[in-house]
Image (cartoon, rainbow, N blue to C red; front, top):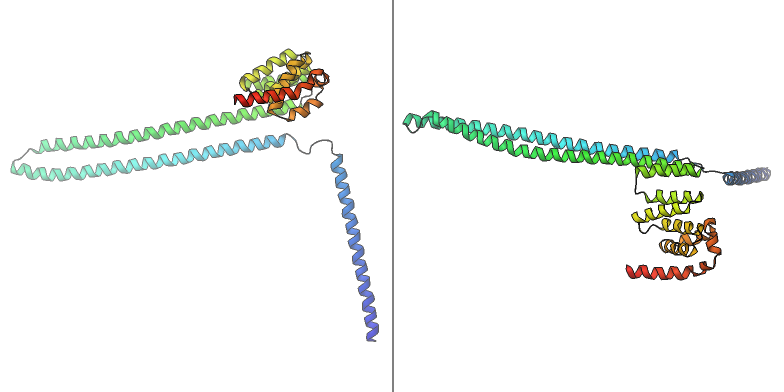
Length: 309
């Protein structure tokens, strides 16, 4: 009988292990299929899972944070002013009490002196009032100066807060215009957006270079050259401006000038070398005979830059 129970227990245990192994194998297969489905869904995505409104939300949060910080500073300054006012009140009260006690002391001494015939009570009273007025005037002038300094500090802080607020609003508006420019499919509309950015920030080098890129698509190389030179007058080491100049001169068939500006761009960023080979605007330059001298010109200009530095 015990042997029979042992056999039955062994059979049940073996069956349990078999069921458990089968369930684990099924779960592993399900997880594998699920991961494969997720990878297929990710590879099937055709656009980003985020929108520009997330950046707008971050800017709004940053703006609110700056406003809260400014409000905190203003509250702290107001508390300091209130404490200064309380200090002034206590000082004036202390001075008034001191002068009053001093007057009583002088009045008593004067009464004694009048009795012995040293001075009249009227002269002593006038002298005491004169001393009291002088002391009070001195204290008032001193604290008026301190209050004037605090008022000037408050005005400066207020002006600084207002300037920060205007700068935040301007940055937010410019960021919205950049997002709009990225979403525009028409070149003319992009140029209009870049013009709006330049109206807000006249010396925005990035807007000038991107506008030059857009006008090149309209086959206006001379216009693009003028825009790039404007950008270089603001930022003499802007690699994107040199790269756009290379594209513009290539469009005009001026390969020597294009190669010189392309070398300047590569000196400032080596990534332009790879971009040159993939840019259709520079394809005529790449296929020209002068392109073989690119490395030589880059090395020579790098040496000149190091020498000037």
